[in-house]
Image (cartoon, rainbow, N blue to C red):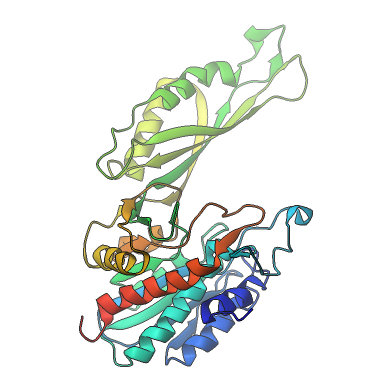
Amino acid sequence: MTLSPTLQLAHELIARPSVTPDDQGCQQLLAERLAALDFRIEAMPRDGVTNLWARRGDQAPLFCFAGHTDVVPPGPLEQWDSPPFAPTIRDGLLYGRGAADMKGSIAAFVCALEAFVAHHPDHRGSIALLITSDEEGPATAGTVEVMRRLDARGEHIDYALVGEPSSSQQLGDTIKNGRRGSISGFLKVRGKQGHVAYPALARNPFHESARALADLAAETWDQGNDHFPPTSLQIANLNMGTGAENVVPGELAAQFNLRFSTELDAATIKRRVTAILDAGGFDYALDWRLSGEPFLTPSGALVEAARAAIAEHCGITTELSTAGGTSDGRFIAPSGAQVVELGPRNATIHQINECVGVDELDQLSDVYAGILERLLGNAA
């Protein structure tokens, strides 16, 4: 079977077992292709994470494709119908870890760029790629680090397209034009260990904090808005006990997460959570981890270019959505850039036998090239 350029590059990327944060030479492969298009290549590694910044042109506006070469672990190898890092085509689908999330999108980025530059060697503005190997991991030394360096030298992204698998039933049916914020709280309630037969000599941390935990779960944080559902708090982990049946434990540990809308910010959440816990009158310690504030890109040049390219190459009208988890778009949006996520179907991401449609990747590359044409084409 003769592979299209997009499929060939997707094969080469999937064959590299780049389990986060190991890049396995994926970015070097990309850098070689981009250098041939006169992109300036910069490696921006940090703490064992491989980051690539490649730019063509010096003028505004700057359009950036953003993505990641790292993948999640494949899971039990014996459950795969073909080895996860041996890309295989069956029944019109390309199988392999990262096929949909998101090596297929990266291959489509590069091939779209090659086609666009061939037609517009003197295109308007500038084009860049921001690629990290730290999206599926803690995401502390990847895109956030590249954005820090760009900000320090005054380099500003105007449009960012993140290649996350955004589509649902068919390619292009959904664009993510925003994401909810995500913040986790790590709570320790300090009681006093003792014998269950002598409760007056102990302080049970669960008994002391149960009402406050219930109040956190029942709190109405906001009503959401036209773009986001209401904010939700979920208690994800709750641990206590010594393993013995007759001991009141001395400590309770709880972890909770809020996915929040643009009606709130992290500072407000922290203040309201602390007020509820303080009202309980028990001894506690609370630490926070903010994964990202919510962001929203309203209808504008980038959204409209994506809609038009999807209509042309997919023949459908796309929907805007902010559903789902977080993405690296949360690190780019605070710079003021317009940010959207557009990629293949997400039905099999992180699963055994992850796959993407063979025709889907070529179509995606055409959509990406169509967006570039509308934003940076010589006649734009």
